[in-house]
Image 1 (cartoon, rainbow, N blue to C red):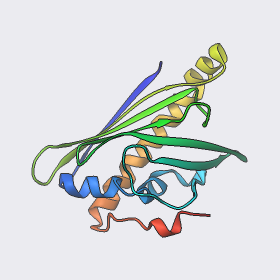
Image 2 (image 1 turned 90 degrees about the vertical axis):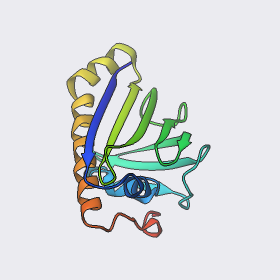
Image 3 (image 1 turned 180 degrees about the vertical axis):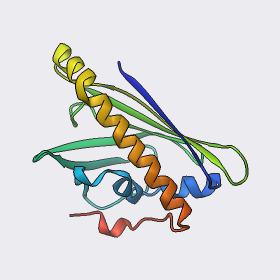
Image 4 (image 1 turned 120 degrees about the vertical axis):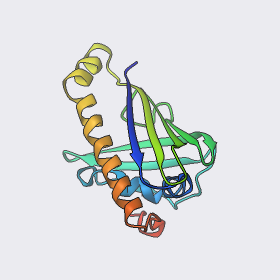
Length: 163
């Protein structure tokens, strides 16, 4: 299965980086606007077993992904996994790891293991555009994370997530 890893060193303490990512509202700040992401249902606290139902629209096509938090270890790690049969991927697992570099710096590592449906056609789609789209998306996510933490206003507003 394809694996992608993205690393970003942040000028923020571990606690601030964790607090930002621990709020489901951060997901919607970190998702590029062209994906028009929204949450189905009320926002819930992040914890192991929570399932978030997220809808994105890209190129006029809406897709729902149900992502379950399968590991939750504050303030160092959480992992989400696409619920089987409930998303655009055959499988998707995303580990968010937070490692302190010093009292005021933190390394964020996003480790993604995924598989597209449709066998050989899915593998070809991955080579032609999916992995580049993921690379662009995570570059955007890390840029926004840096901006949000630098602005000293890392908390997002979960109230504006539901549509």
